[in-house]
Image (cartoon, rainbow over all chains, first blue to last red; front, side):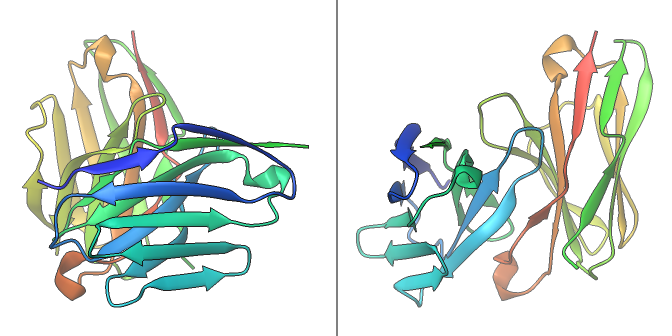
Length: 110
Length: 115
């Protein structure tokens, strides 16, 4: 089955700086890669996603890049703000099933 | 509207109790999911319903019994749970297109404590 690795497990950045979270996946058949943000006591919320026919996607301060050959994808958050503090999960999707990475706890230091 | 609702928000139950978790969506999604999430871990898939039929059961113990009464509702019936079953139970839904690789929208979860 699919295996998704995510790094780093914790990340602290100064407010206004950029944050990068990286994931690798194992199943070459996966072709949908969402990123979720989970705040304390809440369910995961989709923040951005990318499909395998696209190399990069951007939505305001958030961008995702995908390298299908190397089987890795990354989340980039620019101009970080205190409300970006949360746990972020990457995921890779095969038929009907979503496999999550282990999560990154991002802390924005004011 | 991408809202999935779950009730109750919190649940405390003894090991001999029977309780049910409820999930509802009105986005016309035909796939619905139950996940279990332990603290500091990613969500783990338990069950998938496609067109109101159980399509995936990830070898979940029989003390968890899912039910999909219609295309908008998903229940998880709980009986004789163990303390290690304490967790956040998440419901999600998605469309059923593109070979199943559609965006899953999650509810806020039910935090379950088994005493």
